Length: 220
Image (cartoon, rainbow, N blue to C red; front, side, top):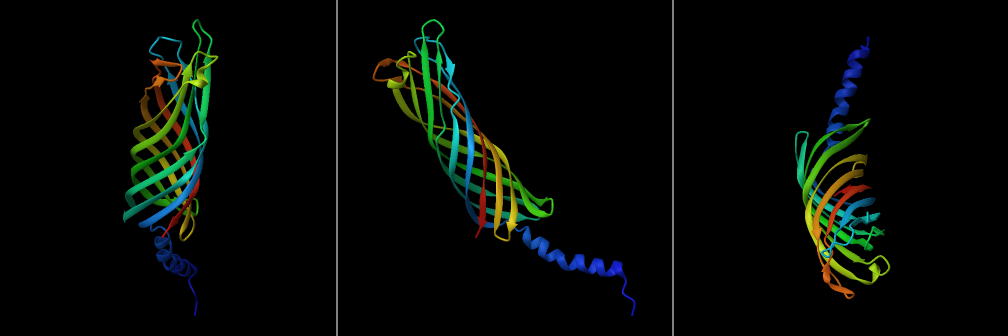
């Protein structure tokens, strides 16, 4: 009996189809961890009209995330929250006229977000291409004052705002994926007095963040 190679190939593809579909099931509970790098645009101004400056805090992010997803065909949607510690910090000195200096440091941050994605493939591996947006909160320390003494004057403040980004989860195995993500966050503007040295002077700081992350996602 002669075997038709085309029919044999078609049978093999059809036989593999259920496994491919199953490998792209992104629904259910999941969680994982990430590490990354963040850079901020942090503009310092002063109520006494001292020279402005940008401290540009940057550094590491490290934390975890958990979420739940639903899937309808190739469309995946759900919710996710995360929490991250950070070593991001930066400072500046402005020697123009009346001198000034400032420093900003991110201690930790978190977010609650919606996620909408499209199940597909990245090369030969199943992948979820997603967008995410929601609310973010961060805890910051700020220093400011004349350039020689700005580190002595500090206030701390929690900031909240909106966050949005794009990412890809790429399957490494049936229950584990490699996550890559970029996110932008606008934390708004902090404002506090420069105690103890200058309690009558406030230093507003407009804080915006760019973050790139990589991590592992586990589906439960």
